[in-house]
Each structure stands twice: as C-alpha cells, then as structure tokens.
Image 1 (cartoon, rainbow, N blue to C red):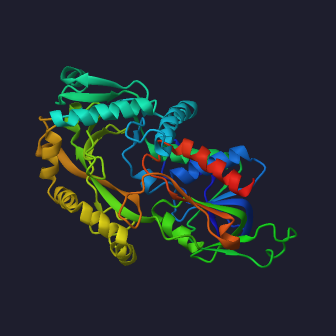
Image 2: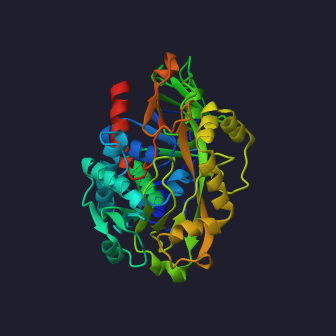
Image 3: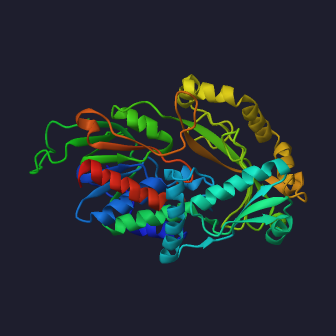
Amino acid sequence: MIRTLSGATLKAAAAGAQPIKDVITTRRLHSTYDVAVVGAGIVGLATVRELILRHPSLSFVLLEKEKELAVHQSGHNSGVIHSGIYYTPGSLKARLCVRGATLAYEYCDKKGLPYKKCGKLIVALEQEEIPRLQALYERGMKNNVRDLSIVDAKGIREREPFCRGIMALDSPYTGIVDWRMVALRYGQDFQEAGGTVVTESEVNDFSMVTESPAGSTEGMKYPIAIRDKKGNEVRCRYVLTCGGLYSDRLSQISGCSQEPRIVPFRGDYLVLKPEKHYLVKGNIYPVPDPRFPFLGVHFTPRMDGSVWLGPNAVLAFKREGYKVYDFNVRDFADALSFRGLQRLVMKNISYGIGEMYRGIFIGAQVKILQKYIPELSLSDVLRGPAGVRAQALDRDGNLVDDFVFDGGVGDVGSRVLHVRNAPSPAATSSLAIAEMVADEVESRFAL
C-alpha cells in the first residue's frame, strides 16, 4: 500500500486549520512517473511545484519518509524572512536570498498567507565591532538589499526602545512568517496542478530495472526503480533528491561521493515570557564574529506573538534529535568518525565548549542577551524549542556555505540529481532555489 495525502488535507493544513492528517488510498505498487522528487521539506516542495508548473504535461511524484510534510528543518526554524545582508557579493547565497525574499513576499500576498515586516537591527555594542558593521552594510548594498541604513544609538532606541547599542544596521525589509505554512501551500499548489504526494516512504534504494512493470505496454520508458523500506516501488524516468539532513546518504545510495557530509547541529532556543514580549519589537541580532561559524544568539519575534531567544549551536547526537538526550548510534558514529568534524572541533574547541555551557546553564546565555536588552532577567525566560541544522562539511573541516549539486555515474547516476546542500537561508530563498534547481533539472535531463 502507498500512502498519499489528499489535496483537501494539504489545503486545510496550509491554511492553519488543522495538522496534516493522512488520507490512505490504495495504488498499484509499481506506479510510474516522469519525475520523482525525494524529500518534502521546503526546498523539495518549492522545486516540485516549480517543475510541474513549467511542465504540466509530465507526471510528478513527491516521496516523503514522514507522515507529514515539512516537519524537520522547514518546521523547526526561526521563521525569519532574511534580506541577504551577510552573504558574499556575487555568491549564489546572496543572489538567491535577495530574489527569494522578494518572491516570498509576493507569494504570501498572492496566496493570502500572513507575514510581518518587523525589520531587523544588527547591533554593535563596542567600538571594535563598528568596522565589521560597516563592512556588513557595504556587503548588503552590493547585494542590492533593500532599504538598508546605519543608525546611531538614538536610532536604535527609536526602533527598539529597550535595546542598547552604539550603532546598528537597520534592515526594515526583514520579516517573519510561518515557513511550514508556506511549505504546505507549495504542496497544495503541486497537488492542484496534478502532482502526487506519497508519505511514509523512506527511500533506501535506486536501481535500473531490467523489465517493464507487469501489465505495462510502455516498455522501458521508466527505467529507474525507487524502493522504500517497506518494499514499495515507484518507477520513473528521472529522480531529484532534496534530502536535507539525509542528503549525503541519499547521494551515496546512488553511488555518488560521500562528501560533503552532513553533520547535525542542534540549536536550543529560550522563549520570553508573555508578560515581557513588550521588550522586543523586531529581530535583534549581534554583529557576527568572523572567527566563529555561527551567527550568535539573537531575539526573534514569531507570528504567534511569542519571542524566541538564541539559539546556541551544539552537535546533535541524532540527525533529527531535537532533545538533549536524543541519540542514534549510526548518526553519532558517522559524525565522530568524520575527519571534517574532528578538524572543525579542533579549530573551534573553545567556542564549542562555550556553546555547550550556555546550553546547560541558561543564565550564561541570558548574560549575553542582557548586553542588548539590560532589562531582561533570568526570571523572564523559559527553555523553548530546538531545531537541527543540516551542516555540510568537507574533509578539511570547512563549512560548505554554498549550494552543491551532484549527479552520479553510470546508468543510475545519469538519471539522478542530488541537491547535496541547500544552506541557510534556504526557506527565504526557496522559490529562487526552486527556479535554479528546475533549470538544472531541465539542463541535465532535457525535459
């Protein structure tokens, strides 16, 4: 039996009316499609939507291992619509983020999805941070980020009355949205265009077939067999994988390189108590320190009215381990045995120890946050949710910060394209990423 989601179910979920419920229908186990996409996170959903809108005469299937869509990185992120400030001018990340933000706002307007342009301040606390702040401003201008400006201490207080700093980069185009709701709406668009969504299908094999499906009169038109752990099989002409936390393993199944490897980092958030929400109006971020790999703790308002503080960044002992004690032997062994992680740890050992300490003793994290909002106290915060980031690493311990595509060799590999890495801010960039990936699919497979 293949488990599918109905369009009505996706529509209700995308509208926020209810969690996704599975609707079970029975199909032939040897279903055939022109293109199969593996992975129903926001990148997979945006891409399969883009492909079916471009090629409505082709048949598409989306395979997802979970019962619901967009439940991992796409459903456990901060909910920010980034404007494109941080990224190297001319890089894919920069171009895709800037275009993606514009497309995201346009899409939400068109579909009636709620969002807020609450803005972002990147705040300098010390004189030594000002050159880095000014460099960020110049980078943002080169990236064509909208409406950027530098404000002084008075300008900071005008925008965030409880925030203290000596200078800040103001990005009013930055916003917030429920990215999972957006992702589900992509899925609804896909189904309304005639696409098929199959859940509870954890893919574990790609292979070339030697005979056509039973009862088929189309011969070897669909030469790739995709099998899941339950023994179900889907046949197709071409495969695209958007596996997120499992992108490296999906690539290896088809004979591709093991690198870059995915190492999971968990980010634990604190939440501001409701009676203290008045302390924060928009996003408040630190000036990033180029010595360390992550952005640092920040203040993030949410669409539901809550305010998240953090996150830290620590190695997760399970690829989908949202709790401190979540553990998977294979995931843990794969991470620790990888030379790239070993080198990353050695280069950032003091930073890593500090992150673990702040994760255990939240007072240490609050002390950092108090530098920006002195009125904040330990009694104002509670432990909150967590997310897991799929961080791609090379064997030298370098973070892979841009997009990586990979196609295998041989008969199977020539018909498979893997999105090996779609780094943050993938949600903001999702519609722009989808355009790029669809172009790549068309180029490689001559759709």
